[in-house]
Length: 337
Image (tube, rainbow, N blue to C red; front, side, top):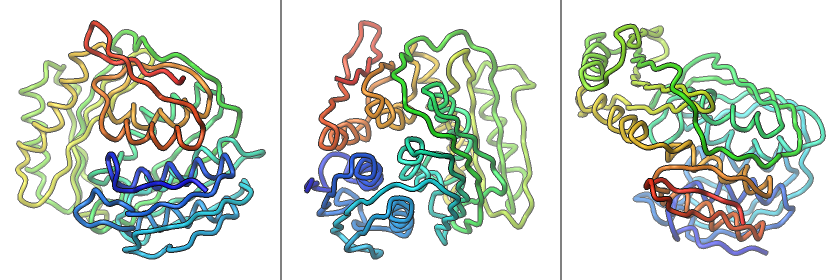
């Protein structure tokens, strides 16, 4: 039985998601105490319960303490079974975070699977659909499997109601090296909004255009059906030969459109100023597949607390260490040891 203190390190839901995925792959049971102990509201939230329920469904697993607000869970894995699955968060909880929990076990299954996930697709504190589709999954597909995603309907906080569909053709994960991102191919800035005044998105794009030295045709505004709102996100995308970085700023009550744009531009500017392959959010996501592949390297900007916490959980299950070494350029190289 692997014992995990959920308050250590980053102290959030990533510990729960990675532990479930690794437990299903390794068939190792685990217990987490002080679940999300590093958060202002500790314990399981609705989206974490859905993610664990999804892990139980695909993996024939059982979980004690599986209720909203629970601070301790005991997870016993079974046999992962590929198939067609439908999971609904029930709120604007992130579909992407549920996908994180079940993707690697299904990627390593014995036959294809299809997932339908309903809930939030563009959430604060979670990777938006565009990041999953353009930044994360292309790297997974380079490692052997084939995973495709389709956005059927966006879902913003707090309404939710989004839907994504995922098709997974499994294959063993091969170790790859992701050091050179290649030449810059394209750039874009898109402000999406629904059921809010159009001037909000116009102001976001105006600030992004002012702060970024990008061509005029790189900037766009897209209005979604009113029924899909209220919601707003500014997406900045930099496509290189070997990787695409997607960063975002989310509209929120009390936060000006200018502040939303400045946040997103700051994140993109920091990435472009480095020569790293992976931005901080992509680095967080790549640790698990690289560790399961048993090797490989990638470069990133300064590792986040999320990355260090994920590495610690991975080592508990796999006995493999995801180590970061700072390079003379200031970027960091991650290697599985």
